[in-house]
Length: 477
Image 1 (cartoon, rainbow, N blue to C red):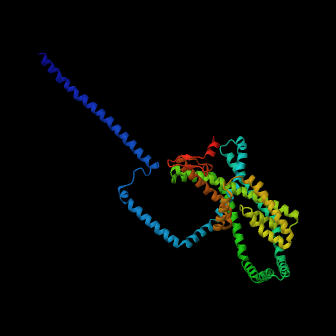
Image 2: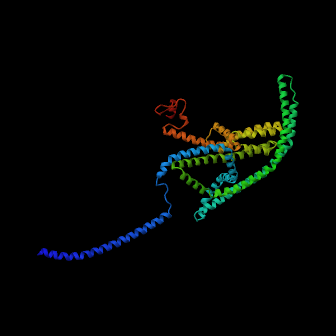
């Protein structure tokens, strides 16, 4: 009986259970529907945000098609580059003409970059002095830096213009007077020299006869050159005078535009530096980018120290030459001082290049004064090479005298006067790169990097161990 009661009760409970299950199913379905709607809205938001943000590039890997054709494309690109290089060599003159045209169009920008590089030390010095003072008075962020930069650029430009105007007022009248006197007196001086050489009396020996013949031939050649070649060159110069004036006006116009460009460069130099650094890190790996930035910093140090120091040194030498020649009452004082000062920019050979034509000019006016000038210029260059130059330049290039001569000859032979001036710092940068590579390889082999370790008695054995001489060992001990 109890079992039947149990069975009677159980059916009643089974009637209420489906209702509860139905309610629970509805509730769960509602929750799932809400969660599904929430997921759909979130996914829609993510899809919209995805298009607003920058997508990542290059993480999917190369496609199968690219993998299949990568080797063939490499061969094709190598062959195409070889063909392009071959035809580029055939059209090298036309390509150089294109680059010359581009350089001619961008010449104001080049002048602006050069002026900005030369004026940058003045701007940096003004920023160094004014920014701390202005920050105490101007509370707005960035205001002190902008005001200091504007004042620094203004001071640099005013100093440059004052220097140019002063030099023009001092040099142009004196140069005009010297050149005018030279043109007026040079033919007469040459005639007197020829007459004196023709009247030289020698004995009747064979050596004297040869010397007379040489003097006669030389005087005839000189007179023929004066009558024919010199007059022809003078006529060509006068005919090209209009073109020369137009070229000078064009260069002055480019220089004025370059000055304006340099002001914009100095105002935004930090932005340009950041953009360049950003491009370097984007294009190269971190290790190579850091190497490029290190070499750029080192090049700036070498070029800046050499160029600015050499300009200051040459200006001082030009002033000292002017003062010395004025005290000695030499002719063509201003012209000779300008020649000596300008050519002194060229390392090593510059003093001699400027001294030779200056000596000839002075000797034509007065031979004895020419001898005095030679003595004076030798003393002046000794002062410059041993006292003034090392004080101003120091060891900015790190090159020995031999490599300086090589750099000047190579740069002058390839690029003329500009190559002679810029060849030394350029060669110094290349020398530093080679030295860095050599030292890196020696450090990898665990060998000493100093040149003093590699004397005639030192060597490296077959196992790669450095063995120094007994003398060096005693010094290190």
